[in-house]
Image 1 (cartoon, rainbow, N blue to C red):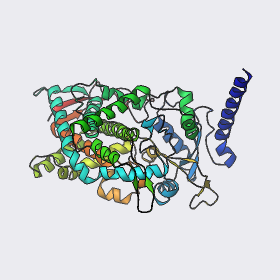
Image 2: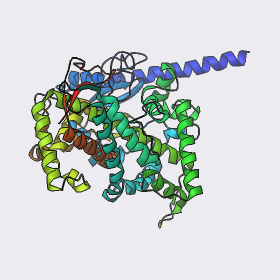
Image 3: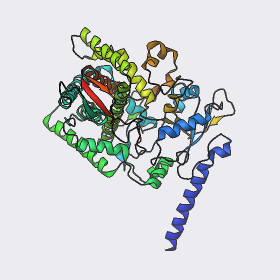
Image 4: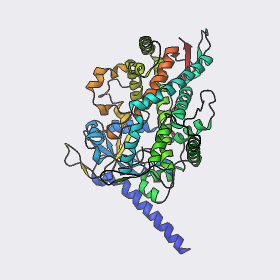
Length: 507
């Protein structure tokens, strides 16, 4: 009995010490910061009544004129260097990347295999996997997947035609956010798993439900979730898990069954799953320098498919939904975009080809401005691998193992970087404007060697979907359109609490 009491006291004392040490980290170092909440740190309202984007932007605005290249921040209970200066952000992401190659995120390959995906992994394992997977996202591989995306986009147009009858002068009010999410779910389901989900016509699929759940639900309550985020290494040693159990089982079984079926029937497809299966078959390899590169097991393979699915369907669908929301309010931009799509298609005999999509420069501008105004992932995270002297500030040191936050969504709303930042203006991304701007001032896909590996795929499916939609339909706001949009604080990315209702007319 007394042993248990002493053990509880010891554990409680350790946790109290760790919390006290963490929550006074910036104070002891004399770095400007806001006094943290003992539980939420500087994220008061997190997953309750405030989205992370607003918390990040507010914090940035408090310190951006103070002249500090970075300030102290508490990501829940984790002391974090909040990068105010974009030049310092560029050093971290690109010039001095070797010291900031890790993200410092929780992952537990043994007990929680879906967390061992490319986004979370660090060190040698990340580098090996990044090199392996880079070959699956080349222009050549995108061209292989292009016909699949076209096929799903044509189905999207058919569904819209059924919902918007010809000759209806009053148009049809549709919830567009869910519709485009079903489009990207079908694209990713086919390209990642080789499965025709058909959520465009049957929305209530298990595939779609699990995708939503992975973005909005956690395995534990607030206390344990905060502990895992704040002390990822200790949480791993304690064999803790993050992914909800039903999500974990669904994706593991789905991938296992898909691989078994393909091997049994000797099926080959030009999709992401096939590329991963080939990597798995190769097993461990010995490089010329004698270094052994570990092969990919089922859990790691599933983790890559899992994150590709989540990142692919949510980011692209949200971008398309917000884009249509803005186009509905800016008919001049919508008309200009439709004119470009029509003109380019006429030059290519009306066929939407890979080269044709690349010629739609204004479409690219419209999507880029949407991603600036609606930054799906609010911030980038890195971790210092050794002490780092801040260039130009010899007295400032980011110590080894310090977590880094680069507030992408705040840069995107900085009036010094983007005059009148609340305005939707695709001309900000003309070739001349982009050339005059530093790359780190636009970070929806990150930057440097650890940028989003699936950027090309995400851009491709969003461009195809938008081109098909705008070519055939006109969007405008109506009485049911929520203005302004309300966002879901429980979502880990920028997601709305309700749908995006727009009036849709045939062109």
